[in-house]
Image (cartoon, rainbow, N blue to C red; front, side, top):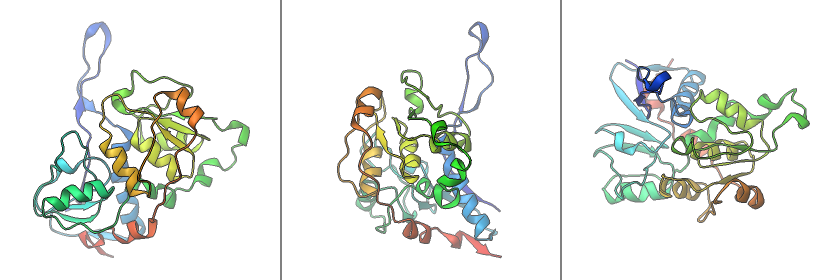
Length: 261
């Protein structure tokens, strides 16, 4: 039985012609789809095979409220819309997004190792920046791109707007071909910083600061300064670079949920 990689991807109705609504379809926010992609690539490269027992893994995203007893957590985090972890009891934590998630889980009595980082930071480990930019002349790179959070998708404007509701490989490619990235999408920032591309958070319209603060603290920055809009983000330039211990995050991957071939 395959390991279920838990991720947020609800069905939503999309507006159609004459005020009618099309059938429900998955939301497909690219940041929420990165978890299954990263996990699948590690499983493939390590030649891991499925065990016979059903298993769930939470990897990437503010999805701790989706946990169930017995789940394994590798790099997921707390959203922060309410100040409790929302996690199920008896979960097996191998890594979390940042120290704020770790603190809330520990207050619930959950054992949490000091291994921090969003697994999306590992994207360049498998698909390096050079693989996107090979053969692309410097003058063809975007000076900047704007990646809004899905809830800011209709209000945020700017040059080279990247739609967050698309295939993760397509969104990541657009980010990789940018020299500067800003926006309220957490994973727009995470992917850019993973590639070493300067990035600046724009204050989101509805999302709480918690998940962003958790990410920045998990990458060695106790403070961060979001811009109020695209113009200010351009003036401010990139946030201080992330410090990422990719080796520790990869080592914490729960191979034992599978078996080696």
